[in-house]
Image (cartoon, rainbow, N blue to C red; front, side, top):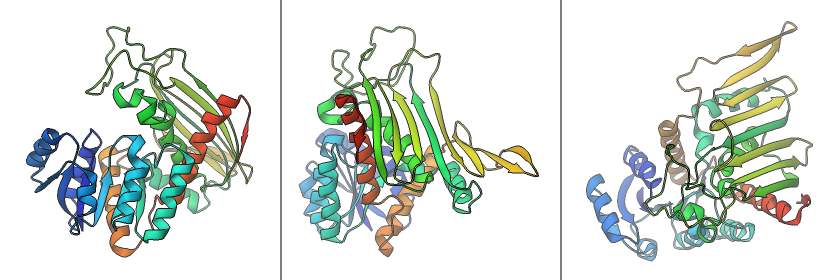
Length: 349
């Protein structure tokens, strides 16, 4: 399968490396509007072709599939154009910036008959896959509640991440998309009923803070920030289950926090910061530590599994572990949280 990676920001490195390790793939090209960057990466990874316009890729009959690693603003448009030109698509999360855009992507998938997979890479982590196997076997019973937090004390990357016109939002659409999807996936992907949400922009990017380093994009600009610094929500599903989530770029908290938990009628589990199962046996509560290589998210391994899964789905006709329908439903949740905050009342879906 001949693949081209479009958009050569930091996340593209994982796509490139993972494709090159897959024996069924030939990474034939890299595409970026910055020709110098594209040429440098092509030389570094020994990739034959360099493109500066996505349309050149879409019109190339030798290309079978693309990875879209560009700004959120462009995800839907590029995915639709790629599908209509007969290419399979792996698109980084989120699938779009709005529900309306995501619906158009879904329509293009149906019209083209091509594969589209959304970059929900945490589904492919060893800890998530092990926990999902326990849930699927009924070990935790019916999952009725989940909690997810990803809080940074200082972590607004700046650049396009801080520009709402290009990103669609801040930590909610950048980080929240991952933890919401992880819990929703483990809960069995229930249909959303209603959302209560709050979004805050009280702190800005806190570029005044000294003596504490954090990741900054190459085009970091301390004067540019149009995204929220905190969002929280309660999501209620049609089956009666619920998910509580909060996520931040900047918050007056002691340290960064990552926690994901699910609770069922027979047991519960912590996915992060480390996989732990809570079970009941012989009228006794047990904390069960699985003996696995990776009890927390194994980024490199999960990315390789994601790419391998996409390639297999393309070559066999699927199904995909992260299909377009899931990208659309997560977009409904994200948009619903923003709407609920703006309207100051719950949103019914």
